[in-house]
Image 1 (cartoon, rainbow, N blue to C red):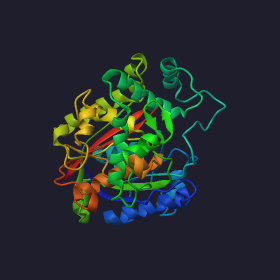
Image 2 (spheres, rainbow, N blue to C red):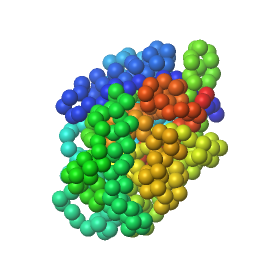
Image 3 (spheres, one colour):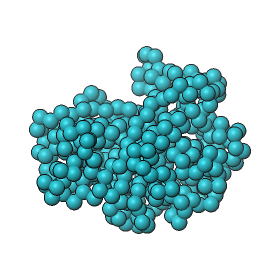
Image 4 (cartoon, rainbow, N blue to C red):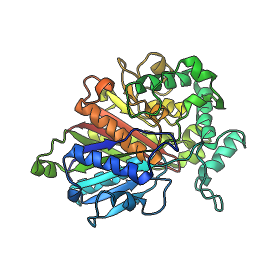
Length: 393
């Protein structure tokens, strides 16, 4: 098996629904940026994995045909919010298995305004297992967005265990906006005070409007290669994938009667454990993290799931500034989903973009000092979680 190198990454600035180019145009732009960054031509790509949620079948082909038609295998991927990193996971597997040595992973999304909801309402719910347990725990609530209930319910669950006040969740949004000021790709770059966060519209449990990621349009891409390919073509590929794991739900998701479990805590924990074991490093060896902060509650519980702090230690981790510059880890220097935005198919590859630049030392004003290891966490309910560890090639 061959170690996988990240030869090139590309991304476009994320935009509000109705203010972006069409999905195929956005994808083309991100792909061309990644190819240029890698220093390879499209004719050298041997396989491609296209991630999206809200587009019809073979949308990946339609997007890639704008770049070229070379007859390569193109696989379309949909894994809810972890779609982009699932495409990355599949591309990495092809490299390491020796099935290909130059593979493209890309993701895009053109979203509608408003909260996420079901597209097909004439058939059984895709998340029926999760929603059934959720309704048993929280009851029926037709006044709040469904996804806000899921993660707000996880926040309530955490509060019942550890007595954390609402403001601790709000402090995560303040940190996200402070980081996003330095990211030209982010949708929301204006700072927010804690008062502004806490006084925004209440969604569910401890969550307010400014603690939820916005629906977003955008695209991102990565070119993965083998070390042999990089050497043969003289590529300056400085970043390697040191470990990667994908998990799906465990029995505990549905048996524990915990909303923390329903939103994927066990998936996060086990994927993190697997990656640390693969790479032979631990949370204390990591300097920068891009994690799935779709809501502040998910960022908070993911600190513990990934071992960035001990269980029950998230409040101190936040209050002591251990999640930002000068702390133990810099979490979401990009501004995360909360500020950068969350175009579902692109999110995992946008995280890859950020961490690749962090390891190259090319993240401009977002640069974290002395980056040796970078961790990515991308979660989709339904469910799938992909955790990836990057380091020097």
